[in-house]
Length: 203
Image (spheres, rainbow, N blue to C red):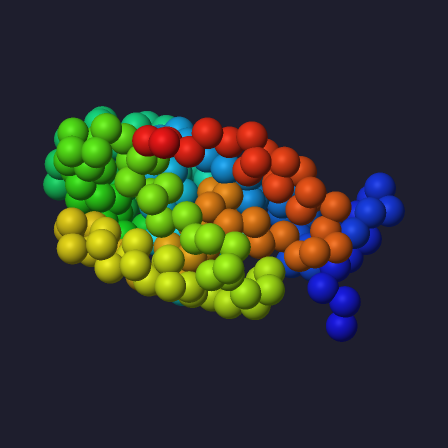
């Protein structure tokens, strides 16, 4: 089976983006492009944790609901959430209403604040785990890596929750720490160009 599908423009793309209509724009404009913004990185870690046991389509469809519920994933604000906020969010149909995951977002917001005080930014910490090309297999051939295992382990040591190696690997794929577009995908070259021009935080 081919690892690509043909887009509306006749050009090949990663096969997974044909699984749902909303995946195409996400694939073409976000997935695999490097990100240094702390709020976006925090958002993605949170959304990947909510995805655990669910489909990405479910999470992507509710992304604006999540953003509204968690103040655009401004972790400085989310860190101040109380039990009353948890109860409010458990009634919010715009998000996935899972107490453990909601509480994890609030916990992780506090841990993100600690990281910013210690490291300067969330991005500076995360991008230290960017794997070298030699450490990677063929695109989309794995669901974890040595780098995702290491990042997951170190986040857990710092008190983060719902950040297992598979969750972290999906985060790394999406935030451009690796370029996991398949070789024939038309977007792979653009992701590579953006990664080449990207200034690594803390470098």
